[in-house]
Length: 279
Image (tube, rainbow, N blue to C red; front, side):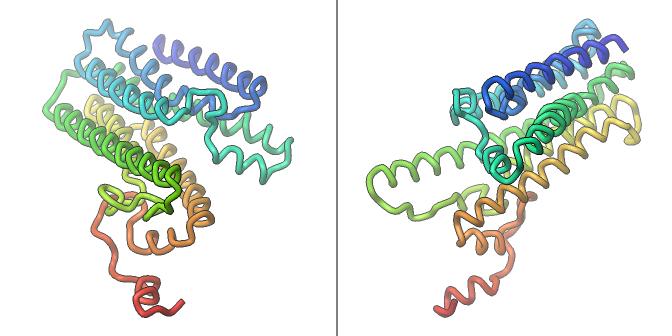
């Protein structure tokens, strides 16, 4: 239990730090800023307590480190670590809630719940630590799938980055952007391919624990499952804001699947009305 206790101490420290910083700065993205860093530390704690001698744990830690490095880079280039780099959705929620209600929401959801979730998604490493079983071909397949999901997420974020930069350049030049949100590349088969790939990586990490224990029945499924629930709620909220800003987003929603990449849906009534000139 020693590595788990060590991770719990890290959890307590991170909760205290992010809560105090949110009160001092008035910004509520401090958990977001540590999102790509803390899980890496949690997994390496288990690998370290195993003396870096458990091949599976070392592999899991290396994969999570790649995940964290990529996400940290993407978050940094978007200005997430700069003063004022708060996620715009927190400002929307603050405007919808009373000051007291948001203070409670900040403490129990943004700080405590999300930080606990970041520990939970890393706990398949605890299962692997307890099992101490040798590496198998299944681990190699899971690692390959993890890397494939990492590539998809990287490509999706890069496509979004390229689109936003082109859009800003057009606006700066006084031109109306041809499209106001990205619909090409991976976004032509999923409205949120980066979200899909992000969740896939943590489900794959859960399966590493299952392989180590020799059973799918592991309580650590809670981490991946709760992360999926969080993403479903976040996706719904994000799309609500997108639809309010871009009415044409409704047509995109009607054609393209929300998360799992798949062939576009059949022509919708929205498309037919546009083609005929009727509103």
